[in-house]
Length: 146
Image (tube, rainbow, N blue to C red; front, side, top):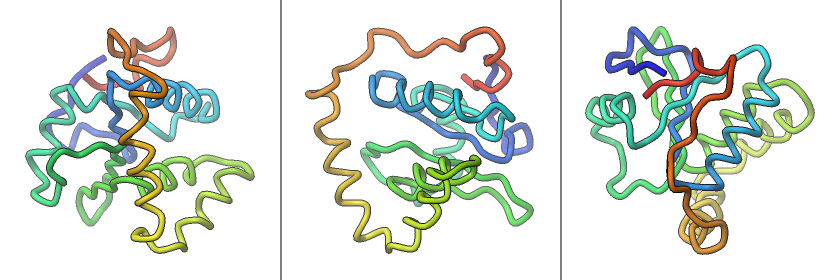
């Protein structure tokens, strides 16, 4: 793993995840298995990469309880939160489920996000916390940032 503290060193799509969250860990593992071409990169919200991104974005919600998708584009760096982050991340993959996710993005975020945020509030009590942050498996390290 390596840290990327400026946007020039980040790939086009980086998913920031809660390194203590069992659901986030399973989500990253699920995404890695369905993304053999390496569209998505990953970094824990507790690491220096996420801290640098957070510092660049005043729109970052206080007490954020969400996966975050960071998109590097010609027009700059964008951050997506809550259901929009998850649906866009999965929507960048191939297959039927990504098509469904892209379709769900047509539903306005204020209608989608309460479900996401409600689940985020109870995920630790249902699925627990991890004692350690996820370590990349062999062949995955180049897709992980600290």
